[in-house]
Length: 234
Figure (tube, one colour):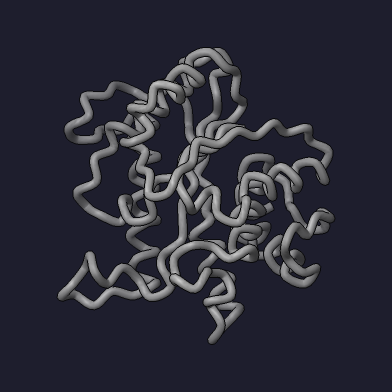
């Protein structure tokens, strides 16, 4: 598993949590990550060490996570993301691509929508639409300005953001339990929910009952696993 993203990926050691879930389910998972604060997929597309790894190493899955706001913008250019997709698909492992559909900020993205008032739900809806649109680009549908031809595979879309929305509804007045104090980055519980949703999406299996509780309580583990399983439909 190769994770490509930023702090939404590496915060609270999410790839390690994902690996532990896989181990509990009987999978021997090798995880590597290219994740740095504030990084975009456009930025990663020009990193030569990543380009080399995609060209020479075998990966079953490559998980792509865009910067937390980018896919909520109607002006988003998918060229770099689709180039990463193409490089991963043309590598020796013909990797399956997974789009890590992220969550919205706790109160939306006020500074980038001013003077229009934003909200958590509005931002989440925009992110969902953006990731769905990017997935269609990778499937070969027309994306203006990319000059790309038909896609060669159907990328998986991991509905992490919608799993968070389900969790927020359950948590009621305490949505910050999923976030760090900045209202953007994931707490350990939020990161565990992300890992559980990715596990359910990639393996098409329910994470419910898997034993590791890395940095979360048994009750938090149980709830996160259930939210993920219901959202993915496994």
